[in-house]
Image (cartoon, rainbow, N blue to C red; front, top):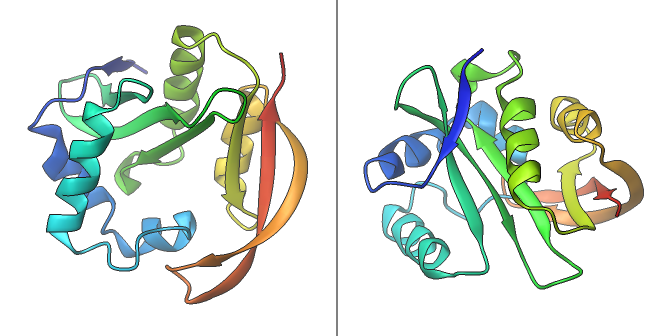
Length: 158
């Protein structure tokens, strides 16, 4: 597998938008915007992300320059979190694990945190393969499911 990370380019945003509007991806992510199809909101969100020097965000590619997803670290010191989104046609082949491992090598600060819907077993496995351990459980409102759901909290220790 030839997974690599690079700076986000303007042309990546259309792929990110398509990924974030995949019904199965939305259900798995669970904690999504109220209306993922709102392109103006999406564009404003990504403009803020790309302008914030505290956010480390990278486009994930696999064997070409095509964006297959993104991975990032965000949040205040001591409470920094990782997040990622992989286009569904790239699921199940280790792309997320490889991309997250590369990001963790580039961002040495610890601890880092992550969250996932309790039933998003694939994402939890990715995080655990990268050294995250379950440190708690919470409940939160998941826009994608229209209800409050269980969420697992994970930490990558020092």
